[in-house]
Length: 505
Ligand code: HEM
Ligand code: HEM
Image (cartoon, rainbow, N blue to C red; front, side):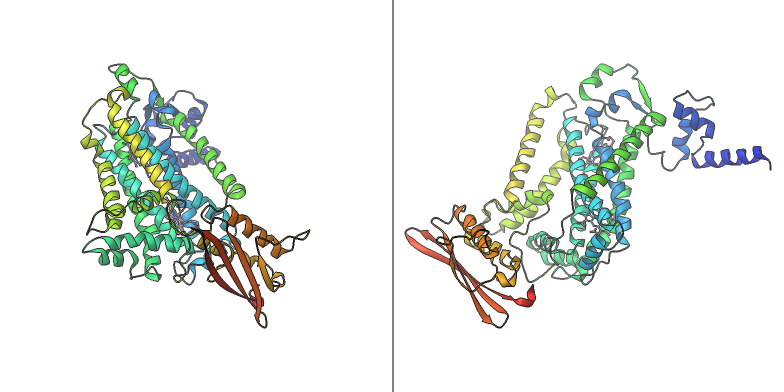
């Protein structure tokens, strides 16, 4: 056997795969030695390799400083790749149909090997990606990196940000559980408020007047085909622009460096090895959190006939929900349209146009006080509106209704359903007078929790509850929960009947 020929063949193959770098070149690179062949084979990679030609050959040293970019653009790309890989795996056991989707989710969690891990990582990286993309946009704003010549890339970036949000939102429906179903139903109903074309928009989004099979299929197609294609195309432009225009330098340093030659950090090997290390650390963190510390939420099966008590948008859209709670002061024009559609569209329009509105060429903080101040106020408004979007703010569900829904609702599962059938002992119980045995019976624990909940509720002065349990038919209990409290010297009541069958347990 001719060993030399085999060695040459291996070298040839490695050179082809490594886009022009032989084994010797790779060895030199990894040892940190200068390249011995000319032209520099490490540069050749950038022109001949599909994967590397969108990366610069070298970075200016000031840009590699972590505290300048916080690597947020890089983290966004890393998370997108993780989403792509886990998403493709999840497509195998998942069917986008209302009959199957939820049960496929249960199977992914409990039956498919590593399914739960894949789902948790997909969900975790999705949430993290929204955060990193928003923070990356904020970094570009704060360091004024959107100014000429990078104005166009800012616009491309905002489109990428919007694609990320739609990605997350469309993924949200795929679990086909209560929260997903209602968040999408309520979210897409915003389109209905648009004058003239509202109904057409709804049909376009949902494929039918209500969210159902057609809507699920549309969201799925968007999630796994349209958005990935759009994302990859736009990201290609974003990267191309970053490489072509060069990175912006930290604002203060830019002036200092003018005319001087800045130290360069080569992409191969310095940057690539650092990135490979961080990618490993990133995957390690995602796997540990997803496997041991956190579980992606999944509620009950979607039910079009049962509106959950607090249907909230995903957290990154709570600010829109907060906006809708603002007073309706627009006369004939529907407030939901103005606050929920017009204002967010205007906000995104302003963000798009930022580099064309802000014509001040200076990038140092001292010269941008006004705009940075406005940016700060904008961030503060987002935080406040997000809080207002949560059910904690001004939702107006009467406290007694909340308690009934929590403890003994007639149309869904409440705490009373958690009790064993035998624990539902016939009788009338009054939370203001009852005493517990030691150890307490399950029903007594329930009553104690009910009592504590009513007493901690400010909206129910001098409140107490009466619980009546009767055997209504064979193996069927009728339970009546009445909450009583005082309002302006008068007793007010709110009551609910619940029927529980022995077989329901
Ligand atoms: C690029 C290719 C992607 C593919 C092929 C893909 C595929 C899928 C599939 C099949 C599901 C349903 C299974 C499940 O819910 O676990 C899903 C869910 C989801 N996806 Fe993606 N996805 C991709 C990217 C993304 C991105 C970039 C994001 C967010 C920025 C995202 C966010 C979500 C969310 C939030 C869910 C619901 C997760 C859950 O609670 O289970 N996906 N995706
Ligand atoms: C999926 C979303 C996005 C990805 C994957 C992404 C990726 C990147 C990467 C890798 C860079 C190189 C510098 C760095 O790491 O910071 C970059 C730069 C840049 N990005 Fe993004 N980006 C995204 C969204 C955005 C958004 C939402 C904006 C604006 C609102 C934006 C505006 C810019 C600009 C102007 C630059 C040039 C910055 C400079 O030279 O300092 N990008 N982006």
